[in-house]
Length: 275
Image (cartoon, rainbow, N blue to C red; front, side):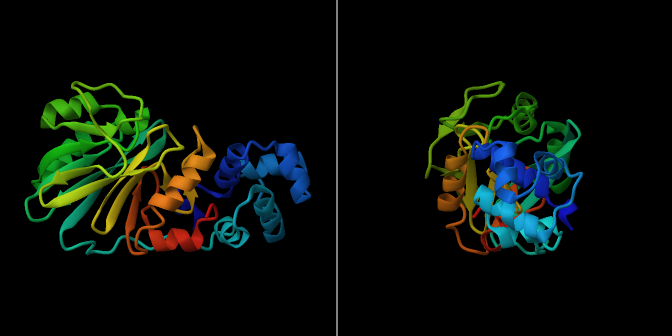
């Protein structure tokens, strides 16, 4: 079951170890295993026992029971229901970037067909093709963060749609054909009859953000099903911002990440070992 997730056990413990600034030797000693064994676990070449998972989780400040369920492939999030919300639809568009699938989304106002394009998955042609197929009207482009696998192709998408692009004020700016419109926590963008609220979720990047409306939130690389994005800037900021600004939303809010399957706030509170 774990293959359905973006991050397996090895990814999770590697991110937590690096985020906490801990060496292989330190964590291995705390868990009563060798450095070589821990390295192999992070590289998916050695499957841990449940007892080892609990000891590693304790050394890393993770929830042991939740981590065991992922390590033993006992959990994956429920699939997206056929009816998400009476006011909106979400279309996921996945494209391969460097050998890994990356998600972009169309957030569609049902009443007006106006649509927000969220990230580009470096494949604007796939987004434009889907827009034509389902007959929606792109109104804005929203970037959760500026990493190339989520923003490459932005100029082509801007020129084809003539849409303004919004990005967090603290985020480095990727290549674009126009001036960005910048956002801060709590700022709102209208998409037809929808009001999309900006939520600060930094840590993976300086100005990473999520976009929330109704029963959905597009979360970029802030959180994945059962994991978080690599804390390239600040582990503390990533954990704190996700906990305070995403996991504080209603349990039935569905989270759409930049990689891997969608999940819900309730499932992440119950199953994500970082929380």
